Structure formats: structure tokens, C-alpha cells
View 1 (spheres, rainbow, N blue to C red):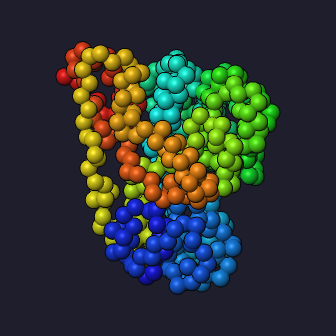
View 2: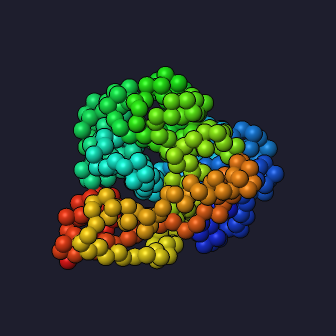
View 3: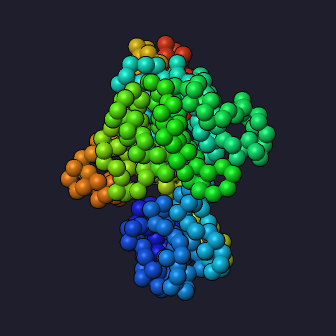
Length: 387
């Protein structure tokens, strides 16, 4: 069996090598010619698996995406060709939540406000948004949620949630607005330009808009005009319209601009790889012998000891940045865009993304004097022990 795999999929040879011959290619170079002799295809989000890609492919019988989202895959085209499909919902959700917390903590430090005193609106309460709400609530941060499809499916209260509000209510009532919606272009709840010019104009001065869902859910031109004109809101953008050739002017105006890497933890990527490996093994009738534990190396920092002397948010920032400092990703995008141009620089950052682990890999040991930090740090996702 010949398996074409995106070069950014970690542990690909280890996992898929026992199932067949592995051909690794950059995601944007996977085309119909590359798939002419392929039996299986494993991608990430930058490869569009659609009619154009599949039109002249005959042998392909399995497609897997090591990602939460599937809007880059035309599932109907796969069904029509009797090609099996698998995705990895939730695989990098923890990493995206890590990114959100790190970004908000960075802004709080820069702009001199307290994260724990802000109200956060979460738009899209699925794998990512649901985990974000759980962590923020455990940290003592007030949250409101908006998810019309869940309201329709579950009723207004929603299992395990305090309730849902509509998007305009979140815009009116929240200090921070976090978007975690899939891209939906049809049906009763489309999300393309969900934040359109009207809603962007309605954002209150001082509001933080964070998008780590899909770039097309925000009208980038309208957001750029708001940032360049009034300049009274803050944008954190990890996803963009027209990736990788994103709007350089918008990237320059964003307080934190990163190249679609919110979910790029090693742990999240390995979960995605392992899920697709298991799906492909089932598809061909072979056992999946490898476990996720077989793939993950030990983290570079396993334990941090905190004694007295740090305030809660200072301690939180220290722990967050011990694992992942989002400022590095922001600086990397601007540096590579300057060197190579935005499109090439954007992809270069993703292809050479440095090792990043998740907050749960770090144990925080608190002294007697610092025990009061336990709820905040445990809520943020760290493993906390007390003396």
C-alpha cells in the first residue's frame, strides 16, 4: 500500500510505515499527480481534498485528516468515489485553549488589566470552545457562550453549561470575544463573515477579538478598517482569509498575529496522527499496535516549583510561558514575512514550527505559602501538587 502523507504530520513513518510505503510531501504540493499511485492520503488543513484533486485519481481508497476541522475536505466527493474518510475531532483542542490563555495573559500584561476580572464571550462551544469555557470557569473567569446549532439541538440551557446567548448579546456584554466556529457557508447557521462589518463596528472600545477558529468567519477588510481607523479594539488572529497569502496590513495591526499554529502542539499533532493511523489500520484490516504513549517523548520541562512572592497573574504568566510563549510565534511570522514575503513566510513558520508541548505536561509544585495559587493554575490546565 502506498500512503501519501503531509510532511508536517509527526511520527508518520513510525505509524504508517508499518501499514505500507510512506511518501511525505509538503501539504501544498499534494496534487493529483502525487496521488496517481496512492492508495491512502493523510493530510492536514492546508491540503484541499476536492473534486479538482480527485478527478483523475483512481487507486485512492482512504483519506484521513489529522485535524479537528474538515472544511478543507469535500466529503460528498469522497462518498461518490467510495473513498473512506476519517478525521480527528478534538485532537488539538487542548493546544488551542493553551494558545488562547497564553494570548490573553500576554495582552493583560501589555495593557495592564487583570484577566480574572474580564468577561469572556465564547462563540462556538464545541471541542475547543467547550474546553475553553471549562478552563476559564475553573479559573474563576466569567464566561458567556454562543452556539446556535447547539441551542437548536439541545435547548437553551445546554448540558453542563450555564446557558447560551446570541452573538449580539456577547458583543454587548463581553470584554473578550473568542471565535471557535467551523466554517459553514450554507444552511440555517452560516459562519462565513459571522463577524461582518456591522458586528465589527459594534465592538466596544477596549474589546479584545480573538479568532482561532476559521479565518473566513471574520470580515478581514472590515476588521482592518476598524483597527486602522479608530484603533480602539485589540485583535489576536491565528487564522486568516486567503492563507497563506494573508493581508499583511491586517497582520501588522493585530496585537498578536500567528500563522495558524494555535493547535500546533506536539501532543495535539500526535493525537491526530494516532487517530488516523488507527482508522487506516481498521480500514485495511490490520491491528493498530502502537499506542499514543509510544509516540510522545518526555517534555523538556516536567516540573516547576513555586514558592511565595508571586501574585496570581504573575505566577500564571510564568507557568504559561514555561511551556509556550505566544510572542515567539508572533515574532516568527513577522520575521519570516519580512525575509520571504508573507505567503512563503507564513508556510515557512508552520513547516519549521519548534517543539511545543501542552500545559498538562507540566507539573507545578506549590509551597505552603503559595497554595492559594492552586485553583487558578489547576484551572488553567497544569498538574498542580501542594507541599
